[in-house]
Length: 115
Image (cartoon, rainbow, N blue to C red):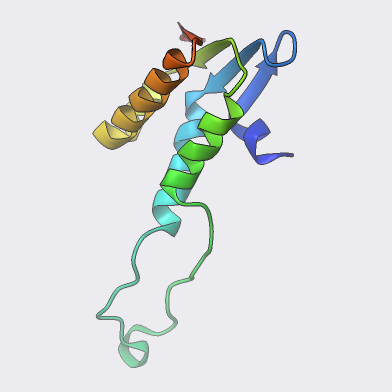
């Protein structure tokens, strides 16, 4: 499965209508937050045992840039189940609104659906 297909569910003609699951967006955003956390400077392997796992992955910025790129050429964005954005707090909501503003500035239309 392609990364963008994990978040976006294509509907209708190619590049015409795209459905965005806020649940999937939140899960991807949460992944970036967990991976991006800084290691504990006070970690002592003698006392604390095995160090925490270190992962390389996309940053929050890269996630949103990838999503913005995936929306280029799309005419209608259908946003589904926005209650998941509440779990991400103000930061996710603010960044998502910025993404939607950019999409609208390119001439796209945003529809909201509860599903």
